[in-house]
Image 1 (cartoon, helix red, strand yellow):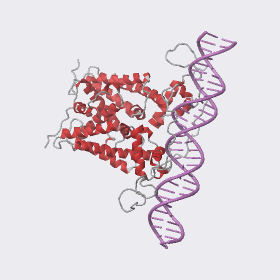
Image 2: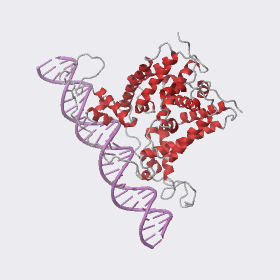
Image 3: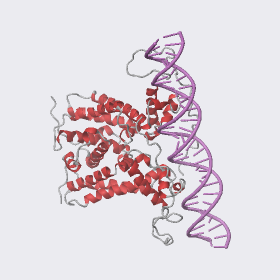
Image 4: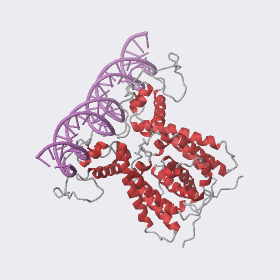
Length: 229
Length: 229
DNA sequence: CTGCAATCTTGACACTGTCAACTTAACCTT
DNA sequence: AAGGTTAAGTTGACAGTGTCAAGATTGCAG
């Protein structure tokens, strides 16, 4: 039986918030570089991604839908097709956006750390990793939960690569162990990725480890690192 | 434009494979224990889960659908409702089935290992873990990819707990390090879970590590273990 | 100013989960 | 055994989904 929502939210397609507040007649169609921002809507592609990010954050990874982002952006259900041919394309763009924030949150912590202390740098990156995952669990699931992505999205590829590059950087000072340089990088990566994945999967017994920042330091083994200098 | 399937498979609802081969009049309604196996169909609940497992294996974690498992079991689209009230319930049952195989594959490897060598036992469990994940990637995603589950499913809870118990067992001989006994258990778990998760997420550079069994031994740090006795 | 191409709209189709009402079959009571 | 209750199956409907097709609108290029 469980609980059922009888039929909430019938007011999906409320238009009228089309160009709210933005510049209406001062469109300044000049350069401005990357954005398409040409026709009716100000910048629909970006608005759809924004809506998608919110949607995922509010209702989970599998709540991302073409029709809902269209409604949120105030356009018809078929409008997104001109920017994202399939749902996977939209999803990939949203994931790319997620990777930007993911990388930003890691860099944020890294810049607070002592740059001359490789271990502090590594732990800082992992702290940023965890902060992102626990503050955006749905986005994390969307990014790493095995959803289909359009492989040819360059924006996504670059954003994802930027994230991985950070982990490569902080793993670089590790002295190669049995597994070689690449092996240690994978090790660090596996630990933090696996730890977060487990914690997000509501696994009862381990969930109540409140002080994750402290646990982070403890959970890492004594990886051999180069001397600072 | 990507590739599109014009409109394949219109023959969804082919009935006629209702009781194919099974005992038709010799239903033997006696004890036989757990199964409900009472009315029209032989054992619809199990058949639906079977179909669900196949469906996930063939078309991915998000291809699991009530109507498709119903069609595969040869019943109407609303028949599953009497066994699984919602899609999340069906999904949870399929995941429970996955955990059974997951645990079995770990135990399979453990029993091949030298029981007096704790490290061999731990590596064996992890080998089974990896075997399951790489042979059933879609099921792995379904199990750990953040899909909604019905929390009150006892069959699932027991199956999942059985899996975790195996990891606890093989982690037990670890000597407590900085993180304490529980910390080391989480560490082992994180490494294998994270490694598999990363490998399944087609992350370019690391994908071509062919010999995973060999890498498995290398990637583990030198965790302190009790002497065999 | 005329065409064109990009953008957005409406409409349709097949598919989905879920609910409601109905039919049927198995069991339980008398 | 007859009858009633209920579980297990059916058809039908509804809202919501991705996606395609065709028409309308807009801004820019010629």
